[in-house]
Image (cartoon, rainbow, N blue to C red; front, side):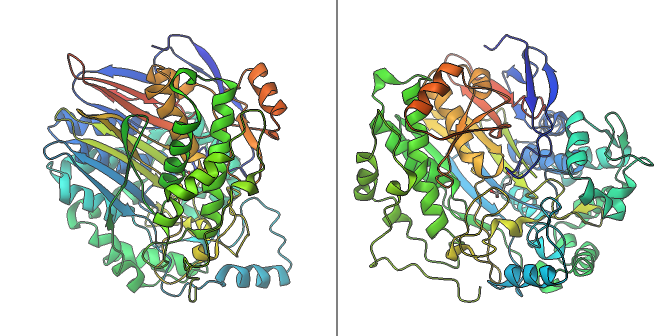
Length: 588
Ligand code: DON
């Protein structure tokens, strides 16, 4: 178990986005404060109040679905930078009674009036008016009404509770309502996030009202009370999600979006649907990995990479060595390039997943691995032959949590409003998302995470933008052994994969697996990134550069929450909240 007191530096905001300026702040983490060992149930969130909300519901007799919903609701209150009812989520649920794994896609959708040129057109109009977009993350896909997708969070929570929950709505909603009504103390993390996003807070009367007179950020320890959100949560608890999709909250969302230059209509909200999808399910390193399918590209990236690694690195060579990091970086190049070419909403574009994952194509990629030398990313590209038709579209702040309950049900949830404080406006006390930036603003143009846009991922009516979010559950023959996921934009999946491999393949205790230094490579740019806050040792880094990798230091890679499930003699849960964001797990 990890027993050292360490000093870490974390990026502020919601842990997202290469475009976010970094404000390192020292955080002394108590030994084991970010990990807990439990024998009955556990909740790991990136904010302690989320873990507490989940644990409260479990203590009251709820199950993992109830607790995950309570944690999602609470997180939306206590961390308005990272998630909430104005955003969307992916939920992976393992039901112990029948061993089923269900994936709920509660991702935001583009409004019906969206089209493929909506962002290039608006950008050009604004430029003609003299806007140079020099203020941070202020493109029309990132800030204001056009940036907002039709939120899926409330419908996702409703679907999770209806399918799998058993507690009363009052029990599930109560912790979040109390937090909104009575207020929370602003954490160091939230204070810094608000400082980085001060323009977003100032432009909205509700968020501006949170700032003390003359202050340029929320202040650590200040009480943040959200009475309007408490009302919205009460209405949601009482009336169900229809309140947010057809009721008075829906009307407020539409008016706020319109005032902000958006195109959302009452019908867009009324028509919103959660999609139940088959999760990706594959065998690697002798374990069963179950994770997010499209519209996430995360699961696909993970599976391609795992398949290559499994072949490249022999059983005797598996350790956190230069070879390991080199192989990881090489393994991600191809799938990220595929994402930039082929990925889109599977309900609207033909996504040739089987062709992309075919053994033949994998072996072409596999053959490129050179232990002595980095191979340029474009060589991993291997476009599909023309026979595979790829349709072009016709017209057109994140948080991860895990819950395991006493019956062995497992919930892995990644929830997002995209950038910190989303699109910079509120409706009915809810911070609205800017998930539309996960679409391609134009073919080849990069989003806030530096991901180049595919033609298949241009906005269009009702489409869901491609995501990296990948809530994951890994199983052996006896059942789930690890639940995990991450926030951190394009770096979500590379972080998840490293933590899972560190723990399950390299044998590190879970807390060490989470705190180990990570790398990231996303094909374009052809650069290997490592973390400043959790640095790779100098000799490893120097060796990677000697292999030809161009290296860049970034603040951190992503924020991972995980629960390990030990099924030896007795049932034991090890829950870890990544110290990169400062949450703590709870359990019993
Ligand atoms: O769905 C996605 O991939 C992004 N909207 C996730 C953004 C994110 O992780 C923000 N960072 N903490």
